[in-house]
Picture 1 (cartoon, rainbow, N blue to C red):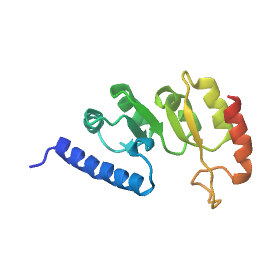
Picture 2: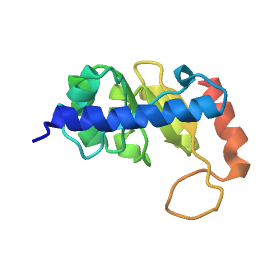
Picture 3: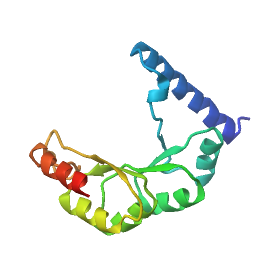
Picture 4: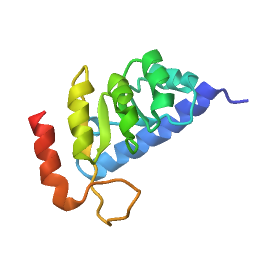
Length: 150
């Protein structure tokens, strides 16, 4: 019977081989690629296994699940979901990177509550679908200015 460690190590090796092949095909080094292990719905024990396999970037989309994992496992933690205003202070306490900023108010609030520097990605909606998140392309310049001014 395969242990959980062996299962994760095997799956990780497959992913790393695919990254290496893609990098070679693009005439790039795989060192230029950051693998983010998305740990949502998985227990802290799996994150500990990933850490023992030299993975140090983790992605989460739920603040309540991420905060205890980030407290238990050192690394670079990425928030990758839609942001709820009432969760922003908590997200800022554990996230090193936020992938989904799409509102001016969130940028301004983050500037007030972040105790450490947080990397950000602006999320843009290219199809205009409501409810999925993402700023309108016409708002991108204003959002970028707000981030740069923070």
